[in-house]
Length: 250
Ligand code: PGA
Image (cartoon, rainbow, N blue to C red; front, side, top):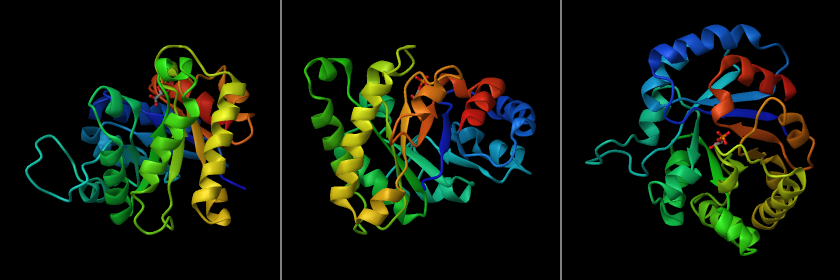
């Protein structure tokens, strides 16, 4: 049985003070047993999050992006090793905003996956099609290309732990959610590719999350879909009450 995962991607929201306030309200709302909860604050808020979640070690923290090099002249970037020593255990790789706003390529995504795994961070590999690609009937082609490229970065033949997140770009921050049928089709496609690419037992362990306008009132329907093992939540993870309600559904 794969463990349920409820992940929150804060994007460029919540500096250190807001992070402390979030955990003051969020931590007491968690009851046992919970799904695995992952929070991706801005890197500048990571240390505040590590301190603020004290007493809730089951809440794991991650960063939203890393550079693939361990160090060097890369102004504005952070490395996997730095993220790990600051308390991150996970990293989002290939989020659609990185791909479409910052022009991140499949090749860069693969290098980031490799860097993450080398430093013991668990990558959450994000894939998803744009509206144009969906209308052109290219969902499968696009998400499999993105997945294959990212898996190419696991230079250990796929022994390292990783997660996958299916996030249709047209559903992110738009209030549009994929129907449970859309999610089921995409997740089944990704699951069967994992089975082809990795040993079956390993493929079975990989959680595939759905992301895109997940809210407290639609999370149960999405989690009911076969092969949806969890959710990656943007906007609705910023508010401690709404994120706690989503975590309860997990
Ligand atoms: P959203 O973002 O929940 O605000 O649509 C999801 C994401 O970008 O991970």
